Length: 164
Image 1 (cartoon, rainbow, N blue to C red):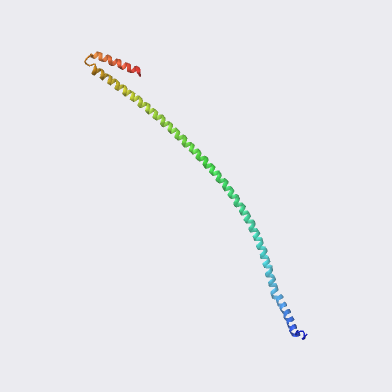
Image 2 (cartoon, rainbow, N blue to C red):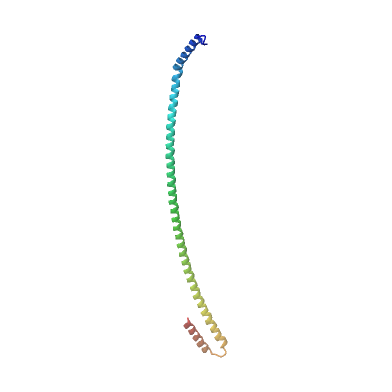
């Protein structure tokens, strides 16, 4: 074996070292290493389970978020519709109130104008009567007697009353 380049003592020492290493490895390192691998495998399984739960939770959360958005949108539309209806109702009430006030103001103005017209007519009548009496007195003063003046004034007053 020496011709092949193999030293028997060295080979036996290496075999002995190999079995010694195998024994120490098996006794002290292999069990710890296998525990470590088992724990890592367990952690990996736990991580995968957690990832699945996380994915399920995110899907549920997304569905809930979508549902809540839809509900909020419906509620928003309902509220806007209610607000528009209320605004239209108030607008109508304000317009009705304004029309009523305008009608009342128009009626009061008509009544006041009618009163003023009547007062002006009375004043005009009074002035016409006064003017007629003055005309009769001044123009016919020299030609008519007092009784004639009274008769003419009475006749003018009667004619004025007939015209009204």
